[in-house]
Amino acid sequence: MGSITTWMDEAPAGPVDYGELVTLADRLLDECDDDTGLLAEKLDALPESLRNELLISDLLNAFQAFFFFFRQMPDEIEAERMMLHPASELPYGIRINEIELLELIFAVTKDGPAMIVSDGDKVLAAYTGNDAYQKALDYIASTL
Figure 1 (spheres, one colour):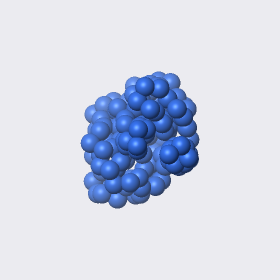
Figure 2 (cartoon, one colour):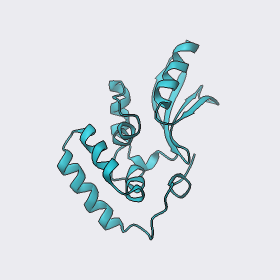
Figure 3 (cartoon, rainbow, N blue to C red):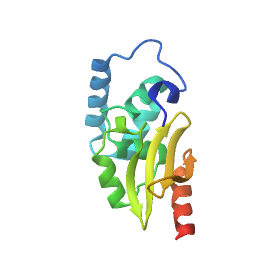
Figure 4 (cartoon, helix red, strand yellow):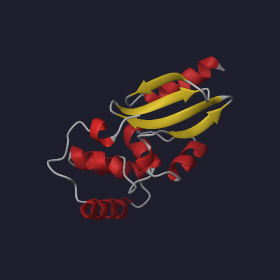
């Protein structure tokens, strides 16, 4: 998939100090507690370069990134799986569900958030953008 240098629309003026990023993430998570909607709002308010760094870092989990991009709750199994993965795995893709014989994979690419439907060997469909999750679910439903 993509990497941070190809995914970010706006490169930081200089390298983002990891210590500052940790401090920012700690502050945001303390302020938001478990309110994922509030966290998404606070991420929206950040400069794009900082937000992009956080969204694919070890400082947030994949579920927090998922909610930021899609602004909806996935099913319970998907949410639990994403909570177990750091957002830093998203450029490589995370399998979040298996429906029948199909895999649903969440990734962050140079084109933004992506949902990939695979049969385990090859990609059957790939969608990007804020509606990618729903499009992937619709594709799966239409093939079953």
